[in-house]
Every structure is written in C-alpha cells, then in structure tokens.
Length: 275
Image (cartoon, rainbow, N blue to C red; front, side, top):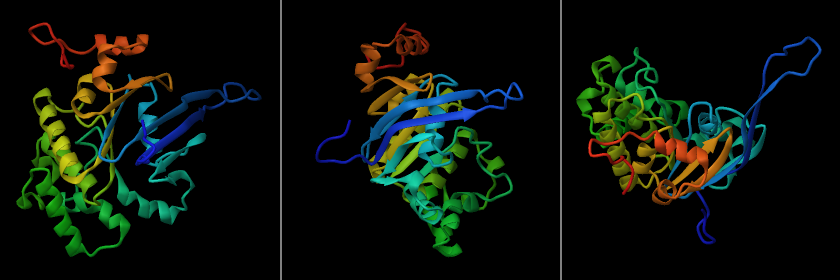
C-alpha cells in the first residue's frame, strides 16, 4: 500500500495481542485469547483505511493498539516513523496531538456534567500547553468546522441530538489538529438518516484539513462511503484487503462474501455498495 517515495503516515507491522484468562485449574496454564495474530497494514497521509469485521473479529483491539490504549504482545505501531509503544510516557502524551479518536457511542463518550466547550477542549487541556482562553477559542473553531454554533459552547450534551453529539465528538478529535483520526463505529449508534450526514462531514473535513482516517466498522456500506482501502479482519487476522470497489465485486475469501451478503438491499433490489 505504500510507495517508494511516500512513507506511510501509519504503519502497523505484525501486530499480535494475546490475553491471558484466569486459570481454570489451580496448577494448569492460564487459557489464552488470541485477539490479534500478525496484523499488518498502512495508512497514507490524507487517505482512509477501513477495518471491517464482525463483533469479536479483533477490529476494536486494533483501534486500541493504534491509539496506544493497550500494549501489543508483539509487533509495532508507527506514526510518522515513531514506534508509539516504545515512546516514554511524556513523549507519548505529546505525540497524542497527532492522533485522536472518535468513539462509537455519542451518548456515553461525552461527560454529561461538562459543557460542550470543556468537552471539546479536553485534549488541549490534557496537553497542558495552552491557556483556558486559547482552549475556548480553539473549541469554537472546531465546533464551527463540524457545523455547530459558538452559542452551543455553553450547553450540555443532553441538549443535542445523537447526530449533533457525534459532531461534538468529532470536534473534540479535531481540536489538536491531528494527522490521524481513529473512528470506532462512528455512525453505528445513529439513525440511518443521520449516518450519511456524519460520513459526508468526515469526508469534508478530510478534504479541508488533510486528515487520515482509520475507520473501524462492521458495515461494508459505511466503509465504502469513506475509505480508499479496506482490510477484512476475521479471527484476528486480515484475510483480504484492497480498494472497496475491487474487494466488494471480486471477493476471494468466504468471510468477505458473508459480510457482503449481510449488506442491506434497496427497494429496487440493489445494494448500498458501488455498482
């Protein structure tokens, strides 16, 4: 996926994550869950890669490892050549300005006790590099970028719809001006009528700011809408990858074909995937 002249923004190499479970017998070895087994992929600057799979496939484990919220058993995650899991804590905290996350649940990911201004400014506050006044100004800019008003800054999350809350979550991710946003099922909790609006917003922001996306999803139609490349994950491994149009029309792996069969049909009998 990379070229000789353009190094990738994100490079994931042979990523493995095994979890030890409690022992079933007093003197027996603890059982192990093999969540990831040698996953490798790249994301170029300004591009989007989708990680697709059903629940339990390992895709959310990938998101946590890319965000350095968990530690791999082996393998590496490099952002602009830096191995995130090898960085000292202080350097990792500073590096987080370059990669942010949008979570699945627009209700659970926003603190109901905080104003929108405080929620959106949270990543800047964690970096401890700017004054409260600068944080508020940047929060206003981020909200404007996602189509919300400055007058919304002193409101609370319960005053917004699900789609608006996800816009707030995207604004929070934008505020550090990151190079990469990891979006874990960013529209799955939203009404179908709102999903396209949020995906179109993400596309617009990519064009405006040159952001790269790592999109985690179980929905092939969502990935097709946003991504340049798709990786299909099954049982902790990438079983197939390629451009959406090619992958969806010439799927080689049985699991990919199973996912394709689950894509909703339109009233005319077609699908939401490219013709």
